[in-house]
Length: 217
Image (cartoon, rainbow, N blue to C red; front, side, top):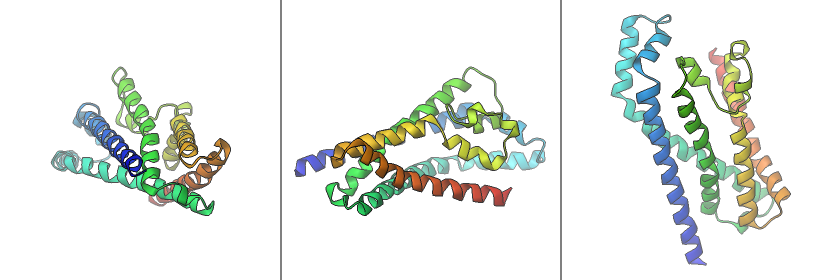
């Protein structure tokens, strides 16, 4: 039994490191080849002075390494928070003893790999089409935002509409399947548990982001 737990833990670490490495590569490619200085300069040229933009770009280059550290921290927090949401759901269903918390984290890490796909699609898409800074920032493949006219949408709705996408649904189903397999419950009970725990957490997060965006607009 100890060997099984150790193997599961090792797999979780491998998937975690793999996701981090690919995410860092994607982030580097975006910063170096897509969100270029010229693109950023053109976007802010009508809002700020030349000197202000120059200083902003200098800071961007000087502190760019921090963005990669933040990426790792934010990804780790994301996995931890989703794991806690699932653990809370299992606790209220009196099933938390059926699976260890580290195994829950491994499930979340595995399921989260699906979110590498839209990032790769985004890079491939903008490799062949001209775009602006705002085009790149707001684009999310197979999201509700992608089928709507962005010019008619309030800025505070952009992020929620990006979050409502096909990959989020796939993520939910993968979580459901892996939890069903590990806790040994039927599919619909697992789906209900994931929807009430992760789904509730996601809704709270979106409401929080909308509240911040409205206050800052």
